[in-house]
Amino acid sequence: METVVNNELVYVLEYCAVNKLSINFKKTNYMLITSPRKNPSISITTCDIECTKQIKYLGVFIDNHLKWEPHIKHINNKLTKNIGILNKLRFYTSVDTLKQLCCTLVFPYINYALLSCWGTASQSQIQKIRTKQNKCIRSILYSHTRECHSPLQTFRCT
Image (tube, rainbow, N blue to C red; front, side):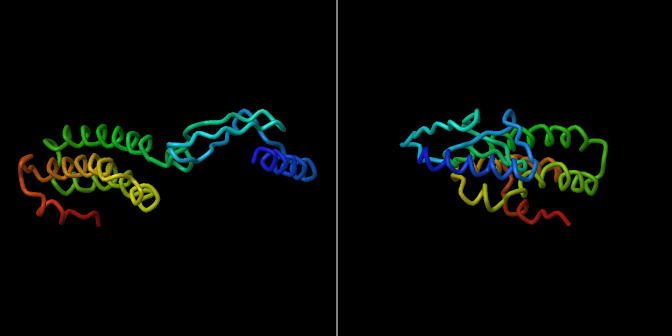
């Protein structure tokens, strides 16, 4: 496998040279997506490229086992901050304004890359996000923390 990767990199470098393109190797990484049970290594001899265990690609954190833990942790941190903002503003604005703020500060983080991340994440990881979402909706609607979830599920961004 190492020889195939190194040979392909030679072709990429030749293509770049012919087309007068350059590669910034300081910004270039590679990641091997493997099973958590297996931990293969690969050595790239053509150029100095760093192996990473996680990358951020188009705003989505991807780890080498496709567990989505780094992405869920990042989203959870963002939601915590934005829900805190909504909690402070709810005493000074109307419910309609809070709904609009929720649709701009909270739901885009949940909806972005919905199928690729949330479709393969474990239920325990998804539950962390659902809890934050319900907390946000309860805060906006001035609901008690023990209130039934069914009225909260009708909340939609329009």
